[in-house]
Length: 275
View 1: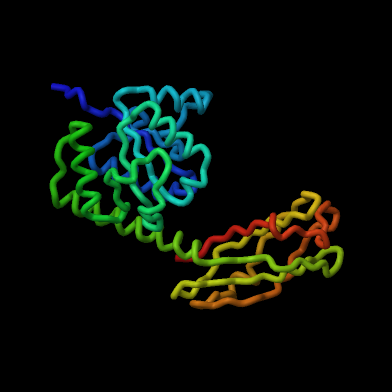
View 2: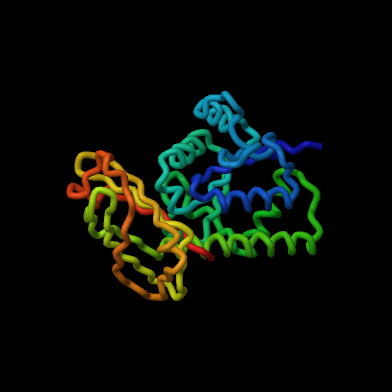
């Protein structure tokens, strides 16, 4: 017999920047017993679980949140609170008085919980074994699923925690690693010299997969530069190291970007490190 409290679908509210965490979370939900279908899980960042082709994103989200048998699962992180769409979802869930649970990414602390989320309501970190056990029991109860053999669940949980720790390590290292553009100098009509400061506050040596630069001058003109393999293949940023290097980049002199008018406050540096 169907319970009045039965939940049929989970709405995963998250930042697209946390998609690797969310992929693992969806897999865990599948392991617990929730079917691999958009009818049971809504997650906008994953193919097959997102917004149907041609649908208006705002109307679709509104329709989903107005359903009485849906539970909202907040994946809270620094990225989440920096995302206006995420905060809109949080507010919409609060307005519609939806049942919700919140899971914190490993590098996000409880004291940073704010907004419509009740900080006194039980939350847990994704890599917390006891929290995952309680979460699993709740999902099984709300979805009226068959209980999982404890040995199988133990292996599923272990695999999930190991994956999450790997993702969080890379994230933490990125959070504690800085690449700053200190000076831009035009060498000739084809080359720019960038004076870069690299900062590593971790206890690990770091190697970079890629480093991309977006430079902007005071007129708003932009130019994209990519660090070449000749720099990256032989470059290690050692533990606790803070150093300045000068790298030379080829650039299109026909670009409207003016190196002498570079606005360092608007420059962006994106990178990824090896785990």
